[in-house]
Length: 301
Image (tube, rainbow, N blue to C red; front, side, top):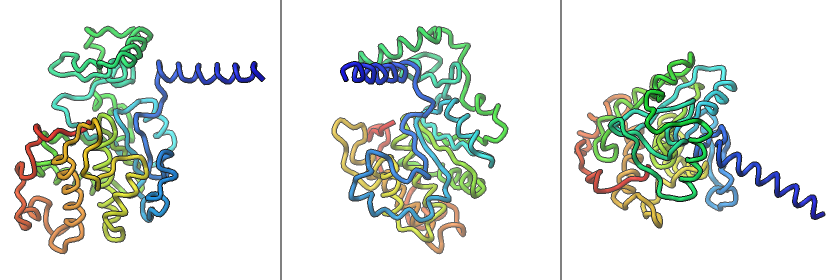
């Protein structure tokens, strides 16, 4: 009995160490609309009665930064062209080394050709140190880095979108580009959303895409609920989390964006008769920082 328990403990420890050092192919905070429910919300009363109607046709997924192995796995399962809708909110491009995002090696981002944002967590720093050693990664060897868009260009069936508004919760012009991107995606194609952590912005835009496809038949609250139950953020909750980075003004602005988009899609003078910006002007909603000062409000990555 003791030997069996010891063997099981060794197996679990080995798997943990492997995951800790190498990372699994699945990207951070990954979820797919076909999964219906995230494990952590499986027994939630709120999720027991969610209406999933129409979500099976979305064929969309979301996560934090991409992992090439994960993308290869998705493409191997899909025969249709796959659309990668990349939601990047950094002034700089996203870089990769040896098919892994720079964040995988150091938990950091590249700014003005400099490595920055070192993680202060001792355990995480140790993990990154081991990964750097195994991968022979030199922090000064920036010539080996490859931009995400260039990395994805090698895929025949991937179309890359990058939406990079500097103030996505207060300046709304970029939504015209988002809508055009949604319109260009053939029904049935796989749509992959990702930001840095795969939570706030990824959930927001997965929700917007769900609205775009299902606004005629699904109430807004049902759409919000099911993305929460998939493992995303609760867009309808404007109360800040304990130790969270989103402030109440930013959470309210995020919900307002989603609610306004739902109204725009259902309004007879909204989509497709008028552009998003034209419709906002009809609603007397300005497009330049009317909701909050983005830099002061704070948003979770």
